[in-house]
Length: 367
Image (tube, rainbow, N blue to C red; front, side, top):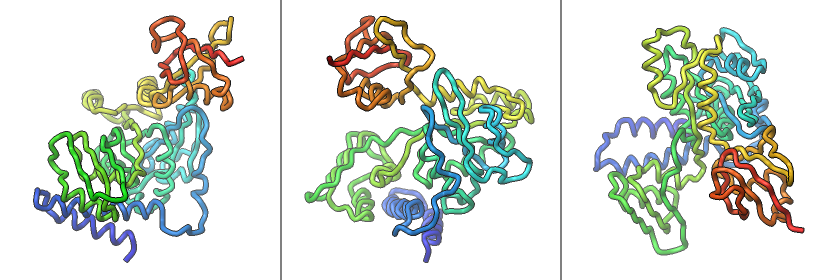
């Protein structure tokens, strides 16, 4: 029996099983088995030959990377060509784009790479179409734009989320606050600082036994589900912010548009007529969460034209030095910083100091 048949069998058994306290352990076990089989699909056992995803491995350029994901013919290519001025083949039939088409836009001083990925079809996570390579590229993005047709958005939204979830991509979620550590002996030590509605020691032991783990420390700091625990054990999940773009708003009424505007993480646009692009770019900037740092040579004015752009999770002075040049941190003595991250203007800081957006930095080297 192949991996796909096993997955289908487990999914049908999960659909048949009623959810209640008595069956939660059994469902947890099935979820763990499903996660293991899915991992085999993403990274098959044994280094088989075969070519890598041709036309998919695009070199990463710029400060951030955004992938356009969606079903065929929802307007991804039109959107890319109107945003970045890149020609991606546009036609009225499905599957026009067959490889990844990159484009770059400059916004608020940051260079952002846009990737038009081929259309996803249902069952992509199980290897149908070019879905596997498409989702593998999506895993490397800093932000995902899911492009939906405004006339049939919810069905498509659920399907795409399901496909991405199956590949270990978690959209608009934080990593689970669960501490998990394997050890050599001592059995399973499970502690929860909050009352758990789903997890208990027996269920945790069963899930871990599926991974052949019999000695581990687990500390849960919130009301977690079995899925959260499996995500932590698997350790290959990526947490990516995501914006849903509802395209073709020229085909609906104003009243419907007002309702759409209230949906979280959504931006209604018309790629063809270039409507609402400013709102889209603002949303993109908010979700990318980039930090721009301006450099200031000694005795000169700051250079406001070309900021150094960092990710907000890696925005310490050390990260800033490494972005400029790898050898700079060895010569680093201290830095003078102007901006919202310091109390005094300027202030002397060390390499652990965390910088804020639009700070001005002057580095002083060792002599």
